[in-house]
Length: 409
Image 1 (cartoon, one colour):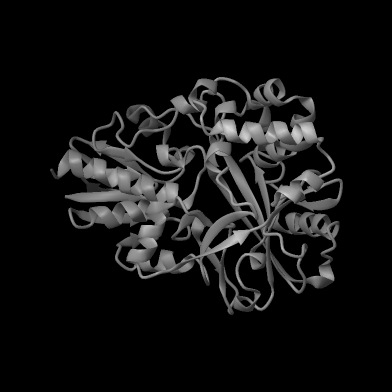
Image 2 (tube, rainbow, N blue to C red):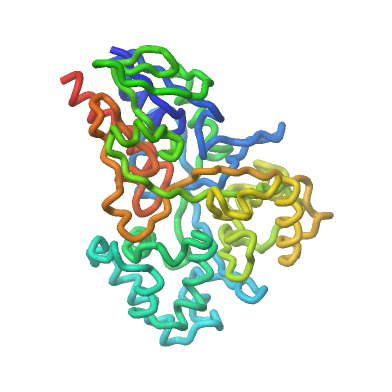
């Protein structure tokens, strides 16, 4: 039996590793193997094009790394919040109490909201808008001074359409923090090692899939016959006639734009992640070398992360225009051009779904209405409410289990 997997990201490769003992598996990938987890290499080191880290609860990723002989290093990652041009650390109780832009009452409200989110049935709020939910439960002040900048940064012009269920679920899974910060994991020297070890055992063809046809019991992928197709690429890239036949709903995606910088100085003293309240260009500064040792790189490695939409103004600017924009904006935080060794711009047109109202009804099962055609990836259950490496790996594993049950047991 032959299986075609479209997309050689973490989902596609995880699925293939589980299926290769049962079938002849071929992966098709038009871009970089590893997808959003692929890396840029400077000559001295390799670093992910888009920021990556993992969590203690990421059991599938941790197990996969261990099986491939890789070790995950765990560090406390300190975070901050930039408001009106000043960066405030928000990790310890004292730092949070010192934050001047929320009252003590509002800080207590936020703390209680975080604790209660763990016990709430977030699915009941799926049709409720996030702005409406925050305003009613926490008030205008917390909405405008805390959540609104974060929502605009993450979802751009679509922030009003986001489901309150998404926020509740995300707060619940991210609220298990230590008193001095959140413990995050990374494979020292880069996740590219994980990608390379996964791909060693797989048959990956660097080709774009231009056409999928269902012919009787079989599928033709680029004119080649397969018994099963697993689609792990972004759903907007799937042909509409296949979507309709498979019963796949229309799901809107957002885009990612990321500036990756090598610099002689850092922006902050020790913060890994700083959310930005008042930048129209990027929503977060991620200082990788405040997470992993500076000595591994010999320079400060910094991400400036932005979210847009496939038709958004930011995503459709040229790389040269984006470089100028990012350099101008990061200069406001004290990192001038003379301190920057290099800057690269990376884009992902379909980096993840927009978690709009009613999204829970659109989460895609692995089996579809088109017999032999499976879907796994960003819209699979493990990637809600937070898309992650672990969610993508788990989606690939679960899709493989469904295929084994349907065809090999």
